[in-house]
Every structure is written in structure tokens, then in C-alpha cells.
Length: 291
Image 1 (tube, rainbow, N blue to C red):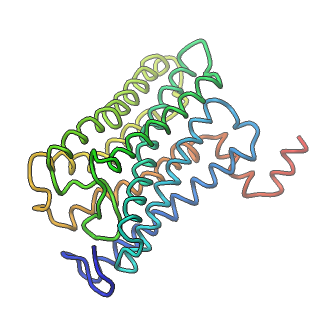
Image 2 (image 1 turned 90 degrees about the vertical axis):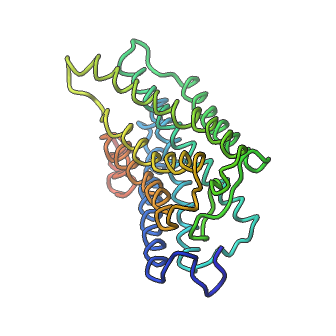
């Protein structure tokens, strides 16, 4: 952790400023888009459906990632972590919960879309609520384990944000990583890919696909894959041998996921897009009520 008035090891003044600025832009972009999405759900009755509940869950998770990025951006611009070791643990836990909930919510949306478009029965409220409850309960469970001793939260190389500590690379970290990654990355990625592939096979030959079936899986793979590769490398080699600047790249990529998700699931959906415009335009809201 960088002390007040000093630069983190391996970083120059401009590099610290650049990382803080990128994190700030990602945080504000993700927060604004996802808050608009959440408000559109709250104020647009047409969006209050079981399928859109899954999108709301994703928007909440991505808002959590953006809030985590905002704290990291503020600390980076201050060039120090001002919240102490307990604050680091809280920051790591909150960020991990949001990240896991985002990944699993994306998989739940993929399955829900397949169920909605490719089966004869629509997604019901009980199933949607159960999925959302499971996603958040599971995410909180896995994120709490490092606080209980399986895994550990510590500072990122910049020293101004906290995440799962991969610098040790011991048996404790390795066992937690492989178990957590299987259930919270590989399984959701498999569900996402298979669900959209089945949609393409069933609907692609007869009609235009109602949703983007390529971007969600790519977002999961490209957004969280660099973190997975960094963690995997830490299980077989000394992660500290990697440049501190290079170690920060996965974090910067992952913090952009909320913006990409908002553009895909919210701005990419005509109904959600209409709800956002109703929130932004009082005249549109009044006209909608009158109709």
C-alpha cells in the first residue's frame, strides 16, 4: 500500500494519474447507465416482467462494480488507500460479490431468454425470483469465504484498491481459486454459450434473432478472462514476477464490463431503451400515463 505522498512501487506520477482517470471514467459511465436502467424498471410498468427482473439484477450488480471502481478511482487519485485494512477487506468483499453476481446474472439472462423464446412456456415470477435470490446468495457465500480464511483479500499492485490476493499462490489460494472459478466462471460461461447457441439453432433459420447472441459470451470471456488468466498463472508461478502495471490491466478491463452490459442489455433492448427515455423526459412520462 502506498503511503501518503509517495508513489506505489513500479508506477510513475503520470501512470498513477492515468489509472485513476480510467477508473473514474469507467465508474461514472457504468453508474450512470445502470442507474438509468434501474430507474426505468422502477418507473415503467411494461418492464416489470420476470425476464426483465433478471436484467434488473444484472444492473444492480454492475452498479456495485462501478461503485467499487469509484472508490478505487478516488484512492488512486489520492495516491493512497485511506480506509485501512478493514476497509480493504470490505472493499474486496463488496467488489467480489458484485462481480460474481454480474457473471451469474448474465448466465441467468441467457437461460431466461432461451426459455422465453425457445419453449412453449414463458418464464414465471417464481422462477425469476428464485434465480435472482440464488445468484445473490451464492455470490455473497463465495465472497465471504476469504473473510473466513479460505482465500484472502489484499491490495492490488497499485495499493489503492483491494481484490482476491493472488500474490501468495499457496495451496489455500489454489484450492479456493479452482473451486470458485469452476462454479462462478466456467459454469456461467457454459450456460451462456449453450443457451445462445441453442437459440441460434432454433430461431436463426426461421426468423431474425430477437437478441444479440454473440456479445454476452464475449463480454464474459474478454471482460473476466484476463483476471482468470492472471489467477491461473499465480497457481503455477510467482505472480510478482509480472510487472505491476501489467497486473493492473485485468482490473481496468473488468471495470469496463458494466458499461458494455448496459449498452447490450439496456440500450440494446427497445423496451428498456424506451423506459430510459421516459425517465429522462417528463413529457414522455406524462404522455405514457395518459395513454
